[in-house]
Length: 273
Length: 255
Image (cartoon, rainbow over all chains, first blue to last red; front, top):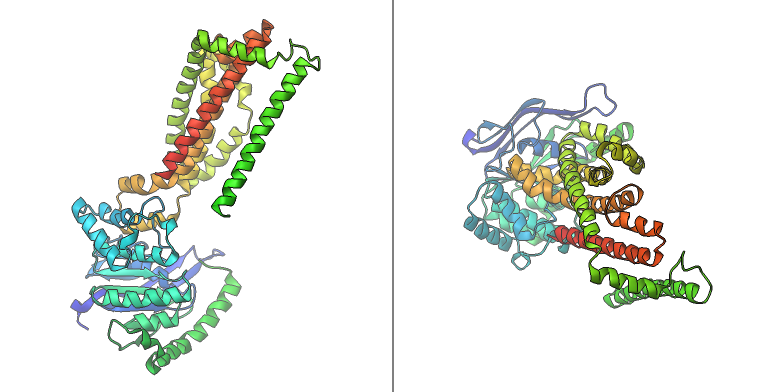
């Protein structure tokens, strides 16, 4: 991998919540190193509280590491980079007072895109996620899956090179997740974006990712990286193949002990965010 | 619940409400016409109706209505401006919320009408003291709801807007204000109604003019039928203003 191929460079990144000595002091990440290649889809998987979302927020400039550096496009991240990075959050974060198309346009309004461009880009990205008939619906009138599609459309309309997705399908039922995963694979195979995708689902990680970074229990660090050599867009029957099962089992093996450690930690420390 | 069932429940509720009012009017009529209730204490409803017709047709209520509505408009404008501004400023800091929210809520629970004698001393018997009491009473629900509206906006909306590059002004206009508006509007409606009630109430205690003053004046002159007509008129005004305020609140919340 040459430096030019690296979209995100993470070097010795550590993070803590609270002050040392506090009852709720938590070391979330410890000396984490990772290079994310341009155009790849990297899944972050690990036990609850291992720092996956923390790392994602640091890549997006929403949180600053207490140690180490995060670089995007060779520049140290010190604040959100709305022109380079778009987010899709677990709780879709659609503004309930705006219609679907207004929600999509709002990101472009913030970035000063001309009105005519906003309309065209919003319609195009909503069409791409299959919501062209729901432009004027409000988020409350949509199902959970449709809301996540709208959130994805909002992120796509910003035309950033990097997309950060924090358990975007985490609150959805299994069937909806499966369909959205398939659609996402098709959609992103033509989008040439660098995607970092946080998930708890082993199957989702194997189905979507080019690489899966497995985190250890807290303080989180990358335990191993698994490569998934399967071209995009992935076919739905990929999940029934021997290769898929093997990769899933490998992930399960890597995660099992870490999840047990995390459960034991939470029993001692109490619930963590 | 299906729409048909919904409609049936709504109709039944309205029927009970109307039935209650009709029953009350019937009791009033029977009490004065057949059960010997003194007309000085409770006048005949038919006579009250004729008095109301007279009040409305002669327009004698206009000067007092003007005084009361002017007091209400000034009091509400002051409490609205100061309550929303102060509420917004407090809501910007969790520390300020922690300090001022319980303090303001504590003061709100004090019966502020007790300050009326003090306000009469400060601002005289005229509109000044009514404006002061109306402002003081309506300020608290407005400031407290503004703090609640702006101070407790879901963090995910703020994070999402920040990640998309919203400036401070854009954050206020497109995220904070619309998120807080429903709660603020409820505070404004409550503030408006209690400003009206406190102004009418204080006019009955110590004043030179206004609808409350007129009612007391008629009671002292033992013109109970006309006094009842004025009470009915004030109730109608209060109900109308409440309906308008609620409709505006609903309309703004839909947008």
